[in-house]
Amino acid sequence: MMLAVFVATGCTGPDLDGDRTPTPSSTHTGAAEATVTPSTTPTSTPPRTSTAEATQAAGIPTREPSSTPDSTTEGQEKVDVELTRYGIDNGVLSAGGVVLGVVDRSGTCTLRVSAKASAASATGPAERSAGTMACGSGLDIDLTGLEGKLTLVLSYESSEHIGTSAPVEVTR
Image (tube, rainbow, N blue to C red; front, side):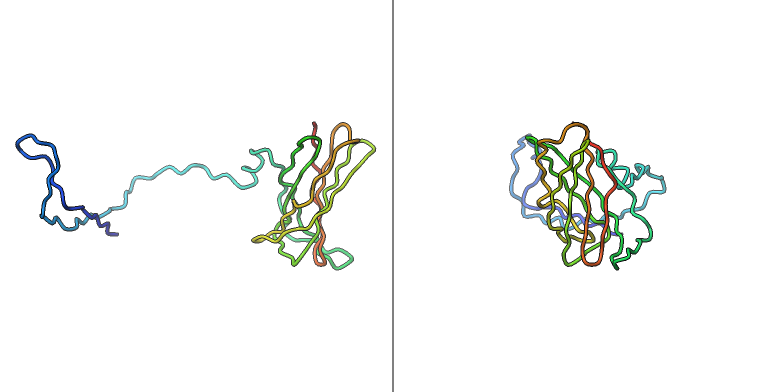
């Protein structure tokens, strides 16, 4: 490996008479060459954290994808759906998630919220992204009338795939 260092020309260092003002110079110093020798001293590498560990540390619920999707009786392949975010602002719950390893032409996401004996749901379109279908558009639910602990479930359905997230309990 060769490292080239270029030195700018046009100024010289301090004069011998003590004046520290740079003065123009017509001297060309050229390029210096340096050789980099790999060190044999081992370096420490910080421990790697899996995406699932980092997501759980951030307070986002996770579920490991299954290694083999199941088939349904209607010809739709079962897929893993993960609820990745949710929040409540002024009595409205907003949520979103992903369908892991699936990129369909179109699909529908449904967020269902239940509390005690009542429930509400919202449906919105899934959006394609690199390697996943993203759920979030239109998944806003007015929580008026829903009291106590909430249970959130995100579902996905397309002509080829179907899936449901693990339930997530939210205390407000």
